[in-house]
Image 1 (cartoon, rainbow, N blue to C red):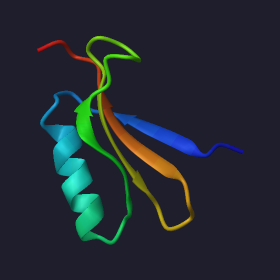
Image 2 (cartoon, rainbow, N blue to C red):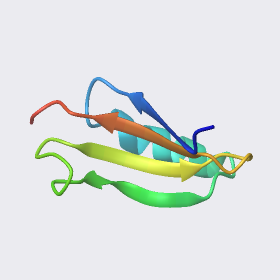
Image 3 (tube, rainbow, N blue to C red):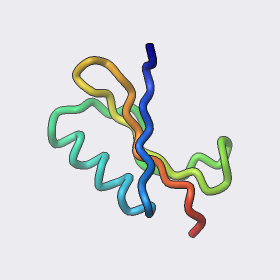
Length: 64
């Protein structure tokens, strides 16, 4: 069983859009959109928790 599911997005604008929509639908925040350079220099992600408790992430690795 997994507890984290990441969705790849094509540009960095999509992870904040995912985050805003998920929060509007009632999903709790698990990390606001932003760079995560400690993981990878171009790692940009946003995290929410779904109703079953899974950590959902929209992630982009495309350089600026």
